[in-house]
Length: 299
Ligand SMILES: NC(=O)c1ccc[n+]([C@@H]2O[C@H](COP(=O)([O-])OP(=O)(O)OC[C@H]3O[C@@H](n4cnc5c(N)ncnc54)[C@H](OP(=O)(O)O)[C@@H]3O)[C@@H](O)[C@H]2O)c1
Image 1: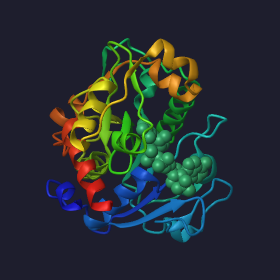
Image 2 (image 1 turned 45 degrees about the vertical axis):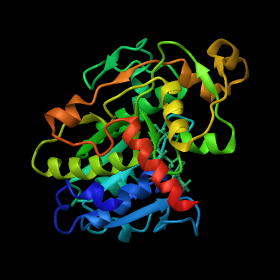
Image 3 (image 1 turned 180 degrees about the vertical axis):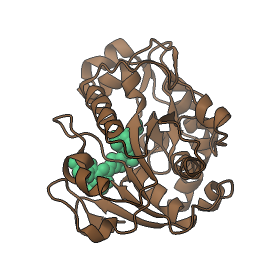
Image 4 (image 1 turned 30 degrees about the vertical axis):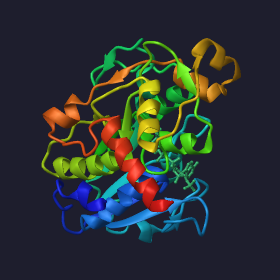
């Protein structure tokens, strides 16, 4: 419920107008929470008629100036282009720089920029060491945003999950793979905590508490087998047999393989202890229970 997200967050400043570039899974949830907290929110998608599309942005042309009129906050949820450039800055940098009322600009990045730490913790002071092509592109986009000198905040996210995007979907359609790679963990974040943290950070920023990079992750990096087993228990589904990573990797897509090749734990101390954000779903167990309750409502 959106009320669970907003009950701990102050309303956004009066006359907040937030433009969300990339109203996909996270972007739409952030937009809903922003509206609930009193903001006017406009969300982009690439195709006319897509759910939640307030305007179309497809990186090929500038936007009508009226979109930016009175804009106080901007968030980009759009991944880098294949040439490593940021899609929003490539087309709209001048319009953004001319938007004189901007108080906060957020960029959803990934914790992939830290690269492989062989299971060690990473925090915002860890030097990025992107190894995958897509993480190298992402780090280049972070730099592009930081160099604009806009009031930018980079938000680094691990694996995003939530209703409609969790271990349950594969369990229910029989495509779950129990890949066993001892010592491997993944950090994750529930989409409601992305939305909650974004609004929380916008409010803090206006009070001058404005770190330029913040990790948004839950408290409990966990091995994938544990997550699937917990989901199966809730859904009362049996588990397929485990498959060793060495065998599974032979048939993995290059994208899936790239995720399994990196092992790190994402520290959220800055967000949750120093800045004071209180996670709605502190670990995969509370988050999966929420996903399952939505699944039951929708089926
Ligand atoms: N999924 C994860 O686990 C994960 C983990 C860490 C970070 N991230 C990053 O966090 C951000 C949000 O993730 P998400 O999973 O919520 O994203 P998502 O659902 O895939 O949404 C991405 C949005 O960007 C738009 N978009 C993509 N390429 C575009 C382009 N070239 N020009 C204009 N619009 C474009 C999409 O448009 P349409 O709506 O028209 O498709 C969509 O609205 C993304 O940058 C993602 O890469 C994701």
